[in-house]
Length: 113
Image (cartoon, rainbow, N blue to C red):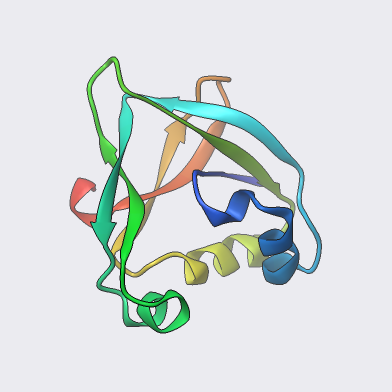
């Protein structure tokens, strides 16, 4: 089982349905010490799908920073691979501990890794 923390479109049941075939178990959670930065995506697949523009990107912050989002519980490895494919190429997946104590994967700006 994998848990993915998201602050974007993956929180929406209709996006989960399109990506996984059904919504997945989702719980509100938060990530301390991180902030959201609006960044322009350089990933051509994202630009083709969503058009050019700025998108929320997770970046390390201060001890006072906190990002609210959702923890998605994925029961299959293929679902995690689908999320990898869904995320922009200029993001990297890292493991973090959410405020709930849950270990989760999160996608951050590649230069944060």
